[in-house]
Length: 453
Image 1 (spheres, rainbow, N blue to C red):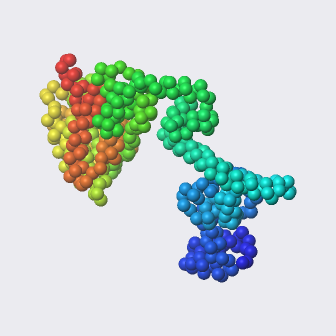
Image 2 (image 1 turned 90 degrees about the vertical axis):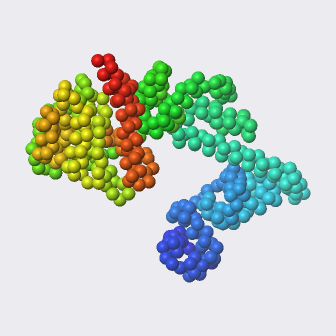
Image 3 (image 1 turned 135 degrees about the vertical axis):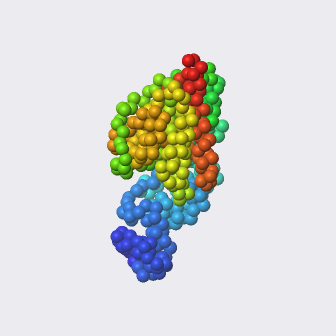
């Protein structure tokens, strides 16, 4: 068999992986045994070009036992195992396997150079004693040690992926969970925590969780609102239920339970330049209203679903954030806005003095729109060009709606979307509480305000 340089081996492997020739054909061309070439391929797949770098690694008895244990447990072949652990040659593994099976664990220890003073007779007796007494027990002990390490670190890794840092309390909990399967003393040594620390935490873990009821309530509220509530809103809902709790406490519980709120996305832009008359920015980001039907804001947002586009046009009352009405259509036409406007006018009384704010979208510049507002004695206000913060409240609503509804629901078709949207708007108005509304929903806050007046 030809002795090839590392670069020649790498080139041969790449030729096989990138070409159409079989490995036996290429092995024949370069003059090596097909099984040897197949091992090179597996080594390259596991370790890349570093697999062919010369190394003078010495393997401890623990390393050898781990490799033998892996081969036995996974059922991999000698060549495959050698490739996985990047052994210089599979014959090395054959030798370890033979030594262990015939002479036991001691045979895997690194031998000192020079002649051993032991006679042949003593050697045979030692080998026989090792086979009958030491090999099985040692292997069993090493297997148990490896099983223990694997079980421990798997649980620790699971905890670290959920909460980051691993505390002594976490380690004690893992040891406690594994105590029936492995010796506690060995587990404590592996976890590197004192015996006293372990029993301190076990004593505390044995006590009932004083936050168990609170955790259940937090989880129930989170699930009821389908992941839309963060810790502050959940705290407000708990207060509504008569339970006083700090928002930081709720935040810690949500972190412990792995409960996370959702994110937001951008909206559709309807500005097309000046197509009508631009109104001044009378609102000037004063989003606070003293009573209902004093300040309304509106805009249009876009949905992309099932290969189609849908456009939503809502009207929002700045007094309580309530969605007064909305329309939805497959095109962002003026009819979409005019129908929404006519529906919202039904909410008005003769005593109301209303201002409606929007961006400079072409719908709100049109003569028909301005005429409709004038007939109702409504003041028109517009954001400055390209300044989304002037209409931040409706922008905020779009972000909340898309994150809490569109990106949360599994929708079947357009009709299902419209049905679920109607349910969400009702939920938003009647059930979704807000901190600035004293922990009430928009409708609850409006009704309470009217009753108090």
